[in-house]
Length: 259
Image 1 (cartoon, rainbow, N blue to C red):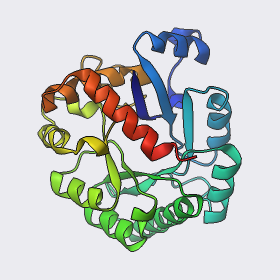
Image 2: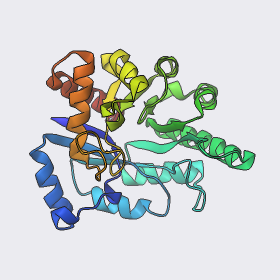
Image 3: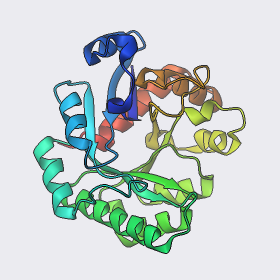
Image 4: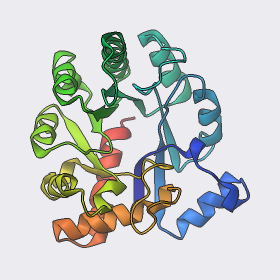
Protein backbone atom coordinates (compact mmCIF):
# COMPACT_ATOMS: atom_id res chain seq x y z
CA UNK A 1 0.00 0.00 0.00
CA UNK A 2 1.29 3.45 -0.96
CA UNK A 3 1.25 6.76 0.91
CA UNK A 4 1.27 10.05 -0.97
CA UNK A 5 3.18 12.32 1.40
CA UNK A 6 2.29 15.55 -0.40
CA UNK A 7 -0.76 16.42 -2.47
CA UNK A 8 -3.26 19.25 -2.85
CA UNK A 9 -6.48 17.28 -3.01
CA UNK A 10 -8.61 20.40 -2.69
CA UNK A 11 -7.22 21.56 -6.04
CA UNK A 12 -7.73 18.27 -7.86
CA UNK A 13 -10.52 18.06 -10.44
CA UNK A 14 -12.86 15.38 -9.13
CA UNK A 15 -15.29 15.65 -12.06
CA UNK A 16 -14.26 12.18 -13.36
CA UNK A 17 -15.48 10.91 -9.97
CA UNK A 18 -18.79 12.75 -10.01
CA UNK A 19 -17.22 15.57 -7.97
CA UNK A 20 -17.47 13.19 -5.04
CA UNK A 21 -14.41 12.72 -2.87
CA UNK A 22 -15.78 9.40 -1.62
CA UNK A 23 -15.92 8.04 -5.17
CA UNK A 24 -12.33 9.15 -5.68
CA UNK A 25 -11.20 7.47 -2.47
CA UNK A 26 -12.97 4.25 -3.43
CA UNK A 27 -11.29 4.27 -6.84
CA UNK A 28 -7.89 4.98 -5.26
CA UNK A 29 -8.07 1.78 -3.24
CA UNK A 30 -7.71 -0.15 -6.48
CA UNK A 31 -4.34 1.56 -6.95
CA UNK A 32 -3.32 0.58 -3.41
CA UNK A 33 -3.33 4.16 -2.16
CA UNK A 34 -3.61 3.81 1.58
CA UNK A 35 -3.15 7.37 2.83
CA UNK A 36 -2.37 10.89 1.66
CA UNK A 37 -1.30 14.19 3.18
CA UNK A 38 -3.20 17.19 1.86
CA UNK A 39 -0.90 20.20 2.15
CA UNK A 40 -2.04 23.78 2.72
CA UNK A 41 -0.99 26.53 0.33
CA UNK A 42 -2.64 29.68 1.67
CA UNK A 43 -4.63 30.97 4.61
CA UNK A 44 -7.78 31.85 2.72
CA UNK A 45 -8.35 28.39 1.21
CA UNK A 46 -7.26 26.48 4.29
CA UNK A 47 -10.68 26.23 6.03
CA UNK A 48 -12.36 24.72 2.96
CA UNK A 49 -9.46 22.31 2.48
CA UNK A 50 -9.59 21.27 6.12
CA UNK A 51 -13.34 20.71 5.96
CA UNK A 52 -12.98 18.64 2.78
CA UNK A 53 -10.52 16.15 4.24
CA UNK A 54 -10.80 15.95 8.02
CA UNK A 55 -13.72 13.53 8.07
CA UNK A 56 -11.66 10.94 6.16
CA UNK A 57 -9.33 8.78 8.23
CA UNK A 58 -7.05 8.11 5.27
CA UNK A 59 -6.32 11.80 4.67
CA UNK A 60 -4.18 13.99 6.92
CA UNK A 61 -3.56 17.69 6.42
CA UNK A 62 -1.12 20.47 7.21
CA UNK A 63 -1.48 24.19 7.85
CA UNK A 64 0.70 26.89 6.33
CA UNK A 65 1.31 29.39 3.55
CA UNK A 66 3.42 28.73 0.44
CA UNK A 67 6.33 31.13 -0.18
CA UNK A 68 4.83 32.24 -3.51
CA UNK A 69 1.58 33.39 -1.91
CA UNK A 70 1.93 37.17 -1.74
CA UNK A 71 -1.62 38.56 -1.82
CA UNK A 72 -3.30 36.83 1.11
CA UNK A 73 -2.93 36.85 4.88
CA UNK A 74 0.48 36.03 6.33
CA UNK A 75 -0.28 34.18 9.59
CA UNK A 76 1.64 34.82 12.76
CA UNK A 77 3.33 32.09 14.77
CA UNK A 78 0.41 32.15 17.21
CA UNK A 79 -2.15 31.76 14.40
CA UNK A 80 -0.28 28.80 12.93
CA UNK A 81 0.06 27.13 16.32
CA UNK A 82 -3.60 27.64 17.21
CA UNK A 83 -4.84 26.31 13.86
CA UNK A 84 -2.54 23.28 13.96
CA UNK A 85 -3.64 22.29 17.46
CA UNK A 86 -7.33 23.07 16.95
CA UNK A 87 -7.62 21.21 13.64
CA UNK A 88 -5.29 18.29 14.28
CA UNK A 89 -2.84 19.18 11.52
CA UNK A 90 0.10 16.77 11.32
CA UNK A 91 2.60 19.28 9.92
CA UNK A 92 3.37 22.95 9.38
CA UNK A 93 3.66 24.11 5.78
CA UNK A 94 4.22 24.10 3.05
CA UNK A 95 6.65 26.89 3.64
CA UNK A 96 10.16 27.64 2.49
CA UNK A 97 11.84 29.77 -0.15
CA UNK A 98 11.25 30.15 -3.88
CA UNK A 99 13.50 32.66 -5.64
CA UNK A 100 12.59 31.55 -9.15
CA UNK A 101 11.80 34.59 -11.29
CA UNK A 102 12.05 37.08 -8.42
CA UNK A 103 14.76 39.61 -7.61
CA UNK A 104 12.79 41.85 -5.26
CA UNK A 105 14.60 42.06 -1.92
CA UNK A 106 11.37 42.89 -0.11
CA UNK A 107 9.79 39.70 -1.45
CA UNK A 108 12.82 37.65 -0.44
CA UNK A 109 12.81 39.17 3.05
CA UNK A 110 9.10 38.40 3.38
CA UNK A 111 9.66 34.78 2.36
CA UNK A 112 12.49 34.38 4.83
CA UNK A 113 10.50 35.88 7.72
CA UNK A 114 7.51 33.66 6.89
CA UNK A 115 9.77 30.61 6.72
CA UNK A 116 11.20 31.39 10.15
CA UNK A 117 7.72 31.86 11.61
CA UNK A 118 6.59 28.51 10.26
CA UNK A 119 9.63 26.81 11.80
CA UNK A 120 8.90 28.48 15.14
CA UNK A 121 5.32 27.18 14.95
CA UNK A 122 6.59 23.71 14.12
CA UNK A 123 8.84 23.74 17.18
CA UNK A 124 6.08 24.99 19.47
CA UNK A 125 3.72 22.24 18.31
CA UNK A 126 6.36 19.50 17.89
CA UNK A 127 5.27 18.97 14.31
CA UNK A 128 7.51 18.53 11.27
CA UNK A 129 7.85 21.33 8.75
CA UNK A 130 7.14 20.80 5.05
CA UNK A 131 9.69 22.78 3.04
CA UNK A 132 9.45 23.98 -0.55
CA UNK A 133 12.80 25.16 -1.92
CA UNK A 134 13.57 26.42 -5.40
CA UNK A 135 16.65 28.37 -6.49
CA UNK A 136 17.30 29.12 -2.82
CA UNK A 137 19.62 26.35 -1.72
CA UNK A 138 22.00 28.34 0.49
CA UNK A 139 19.36 30.41 2.26
CA UNK A 140 17.11 27.40 2.83
CA UNK A 141 19.88 25.46 4.53
CA UNK A 142 21.07 28.51 6.47
CA UNK A 143 17.63 29.24 7.93
CA UNK A 144 17.04 25.57 8.74
CA UNK A 145 20.31 25.62 10.69
CA UNK A 146 19.82 29.03 12.35
CA UNK A 147 16.31 28.18 13.53
CA UNK A 148 17.32 24.82 14.99
CA UNK A 149 14.88 22.96 12.78
CA UNK A 150 16.54 19.64 13.56
CA UNK A 151 14.58 19.76 16.82
CA UNK A 152 11.37 18.82 14.98
CA UNK A 153 12.74 17.76 11.61
CA UNK A 154 10.77 17.89 8.42
CA UNK A 155 10.83 17.13 4.74
CA UNK A 156 12.20 18.80 1.66
CA UNK A 157 9.30 18.04 -0.65
CA UNK A 158 9.40 17.57 -4.44
CA UNK A 159 13.18 17.54 -4.20
CA UNK A 160 15.00 18.72 -7.34
CA UNK A 161 18.32 19.94 -5.95
CA UNK A 162 21.64 18.08 -5.85
CA UNK A 163 22.93 15.39 -3.52
CA UNK A 164 25.09 17.93 -1.68
CA UNK A 165 21.98 19.77 -0.50
CA UNK A 166 20.22 16.51 0.32
CA UNK A 167 23.11 15.40 2.53
CA UNK A 168 23.11 18.66 4.46
CA UNK A 169 19.35 18.45 4.97
CA UNK A 170 19.70 14.89 6.22
CA UNK A 171 22.17 16.18 8.82
CA UNK A 172 19.40 18.45 10.13
CA UNK A 173 16.93 15.62 10.67
CA UNK A 174 15.12 16.05 7.35
CA UNK A 175 13.54 13.54 5.03
CA UNK A 176 13.73 13.84 1.25
CA UNK A 177 10.57 13.39 -0.80
CA UNK A 178 10.69 12.35 -4.46
CA UNK A 179 7.90 13.40 -6.82
CA UNK A 180 6.82 12.41 -10.33
CA UNK A 181 9.75 14.40 -11.70
CA UNK A 182 11.81 11.25 -11.07
CA UNK A 183 9.97 9.61 -14.00
CA UNK A 184 11.18 12.28 -16.44
CA UNK A 185 14.04 11.15 -18.67
CA UNK A 186 16.04 14.36 -18.33
CA UNK A 187 15.82 14.57 -14.54
CA UNK A 188 19.29 13.11 -14.02
CA UNK A 189 19.97 15.03 -10.81
CA UNK A 190 16.76 13.72 -9.24
CA UNK A 191 17.61 10.19 -10.40
CA UNK A 192 20.96 10.39 -8.66
CA UNK A 193 19.48 11.64 -5.41
CA UNK A 194 16.74 8.99 -5.50
CA UNK A 195 19.43 6.31 -5.62
CA UNK A 196 21.37 7.70 -2.66
CA UNK A 197 18.75 8.70 -0.07
CA UNK A 198 19.06 6.43 2.97
CA UNK A 199 16.13 4.05 3.20
CA UNK A 200 15.04 5.50 6.53
CA UNK A 201 14.74 9.05 5.11
CA UNK A 202 12.94 8.44 1.82
CA UNK A 203 9.41 9.64 1.04
CA UNK A 204 7.37 9.69 -2.17
CA UNK A 205 4.69 12.11 -3.31
CA UNK A 206 2.65 13.35 -6.24
CA UNK A 207 2.29 17.08 -5.51
CA UNK A 208 -1.00 16.61 -7.33
CA UNK A 209 -2.64 18.15 -9.28
CA UNK A 210 0.78 19.26 -10.56
CA UNK A 211 3.70 17.35 -12.09
CA UNK A 212 1.95 14.22 -13.33
CA UNK A 213 4.44 11.35 -13.71
CA UNK A 214 5.11 9.30 -16.79
CA UNK A 215 2.93 7.70 -18.21
CA UNK A 216 0.41 10.39 -17.22
CA UNK A 217 2.61 13.36 -18.05
CA UNK A 218 0.67 16.22 -19.58
CA UNK A 219 -2.51 15.23 -17.76
CA UNK A 220 -3.82 16.23 -14.37
CA UNK A 221 -2.08 14.48 -11.55
CA UNK A 222 -3.92 12.45 -8.90
CA UNK A 223 -2.64 11.10 -5.56
CA UNK A 224 -3.06 7.50 -6.68
CA UNK A 225 -0.43 8.13 -9.35
CA UNK A 226 2.15 7.91 -6.57
CA UNK A 227 2.49 4.27 -7.60
CA UNK A 228 4.38 5.42 -10.72
CA UNK A 229 6.79 7.38 -8.55
CA UNK A 230 7.36 4.29 -6.40
CA UNK A 231 7.94 2.11 -9.44
CA UNK A 232 10.60 4.43 -10.86
CA UNK A 233 12.32 4.89 -7.50
CA UNK A 234 12.39 1.11 -7.07
CA UNK A 235 13.92 0.73 -10.52
CA UNK A 236 16.62 3.28 -9.78
CA UNK A 237 17.44 1.70 -6.42
CA UNK A 238 17.37 -1.86 -7.77
CA UNK A 239 14.70 -3.07 -5.38
CA UNK A 240 11.14 -4.38 -5.53
CA UNK A 241 8.41 -1.74 -5.63
CA UNK A 242 6.84 -3.33 -2.53
CA UNK A 243 10.00 -2.49 -0.62
CA UNK A 244 9.70 1.16 -1.62
CA UNK A 245 6.03 1.15 -0.61
CA UNK A 246 6.83 -0.35 2.80
CA UNK A 247 9.85 1.82 3.53
CA UNK A 248 8.18 5.08 2.56
CA UNK A 249 5.01 4.22 4.48
CA UNK A 250 7.03 3.49 7.61
CA UNK A 251 8.96 6.73 7.17
CA UNK A 252 5.76 8.69 6.72
CA UNK A 253 4.29 7.35 9.95
CA UNK A 254 7.52 7.99 11.82
CA UNK A 255 7.71 11.61 10.67
CA UNK A 256 4.07 12.69 10.82
CA UNK A 257 2.30 10.44 13.33
CA UNK A 258 3.80 11.52 16.63
CA UNK A 259 0.82 11.28 18.98
